[in-house]
Image (cartoon, rainbow, N blue to C red; front, side, top):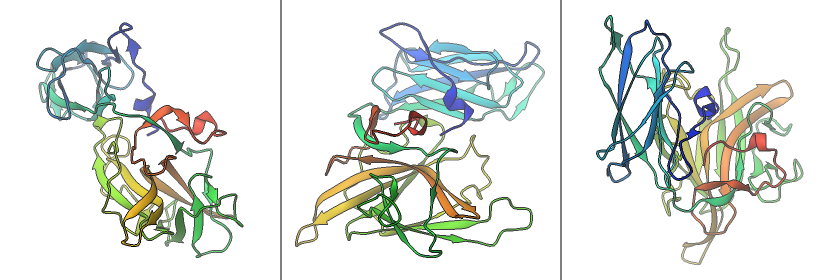
Length: 326
């Protein structure tokens, strides 16, 4: 997710336990805020000795570890409204919450007092090498010249299929439509239609992962069934009024491609992957384009969606385009 929170780093406490960040306070004359952070695993079991941090932007850092009930309280003074709480435990993916947590203040402290934060840690199960790509500002995929048509896109080649690119397999079929822009709009509205080449291919719009959660936003495994034949993405994902980067959910889609079925329609072979975050649809004089972060498991019939973050099957991809999360 490319916001400033993701660039904050944990400092090492020791070689055998935990890494953490700290909590920031803006000035000594500002009201206090107290965070009560509770850390549990996915079953609700409290996690003792979890390294925790809570914070406001970049001013001062305060840290601590949870007790036997999985709870730690952190207090500092701040003039900031954005609050970050974060935890790390060996064997689990990091978990965090970043949003506006304060509603009002008295002369000496913010309300509510304390802020209750629950962080759920997902177990690291079986990270796997994957094709993993996050285009960022320096990369986009421009649609071929034939306006209004649908084109095949090869997710393992990260390119359009021949004759428009170097792709061989049409994993997904994409078309784009531009809407009518308002007078003061820099980016006109638009949609991108996604369809598939094989009868058992498809996509599932996974439930939105809240920004306050595990860095692994997706399920650990792709579902066996429930895939839709098509999906329409919009470049107006924030019309719900949420402030981008603070309270907007992390959207995740799981997909199945290159599927083969037996004579009874059962899937006997397929590749599974996920789309992380909202695809961006852009319009330029040279044609429409899109940016999309995706992960694709290169092993046939392997439904694992945990990327190991060490082995990218895009062997020639610059590290600047590697996703920052598993």
